[in-house]
Length: 144
Image (cartoon, rainbow, N blue to C red; front, side, top):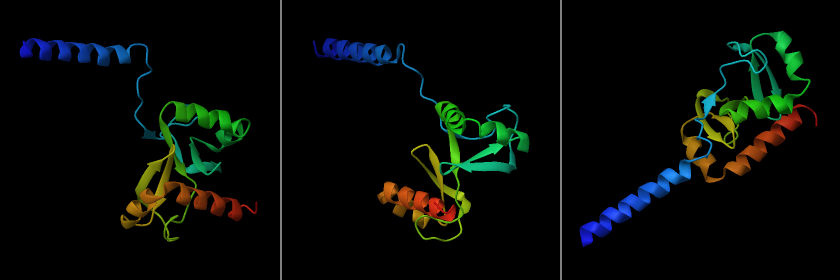
């Protein structure tokens, strides 16, 4: 009787799990940007613009002007595909030191660069605080 109960429970659980996936959009893996949002060509890391605290890369300078016509729509399109955009930053939001592009955390659809591995733990304790600081620093640097 116990075996029968366990088998029924497992079958029900399996059906429930499989049923939840029907019609649901598959989870997309978060990946860094590799293609130009305008042409879908390979990006050139020397060609970029910053918008809304995010760095967007392009294949050529001509695409930057096309992007500026509706940047929010282009960013929304990339993020809906699971693309994580780099943060437009040069200093660590935790220590204000120069960032090491090999050390980062992904938070809220943004890739946040840090100066050292010790800052990962500090950032994760209060990510909203550090994102807010980064955004304020970016606004101040643009004279806003």
